[in-house]
Length: 174
Image 1 (cartoon, rainbow, N blue to C red):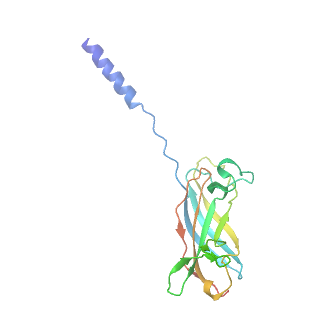
Image 2: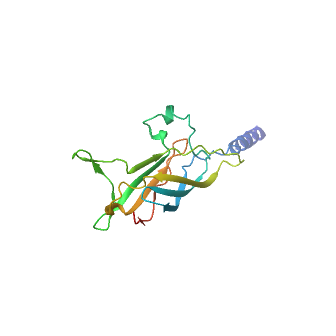
Image 3: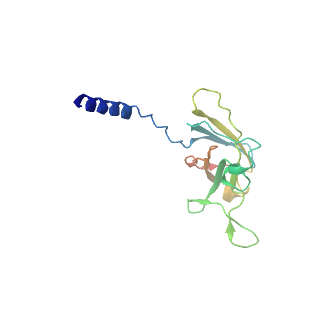
């Protein structure tokens, strides 16, 4: 009886130690600012680096239903806000008053769909650089908006939100 007891305890310990390793939780993408350039008063190029442990960056053209339906967070995967430098030296979100009404956010919010990135490597982790052509990179061509910065973030296909990046301040002659 004593041998049977020890044998049972050994079997329980063996089965308890054979627990499967848990799968890590999906991680959000990590992004960082790389560069911003302008060629004139309306065209700019924003470049940023990304790393995504799940390797699921970008949207297909046909991704327009379900999680990616119009008017949902998932329809766009790149979100960027414009901030201008005010007369007190602070960066302020741009708001526009329509027809003399209350200020509302308008075209200073840039929304884009990053094209789907095919991951053909064995590791799921995907690292790279994304270049976004900004047509109308600032709200107006007035002197008030010559000094500005951006704040941006992305979502992966599983709708994990990345960190929010604030760019350095930019100054243009336009």
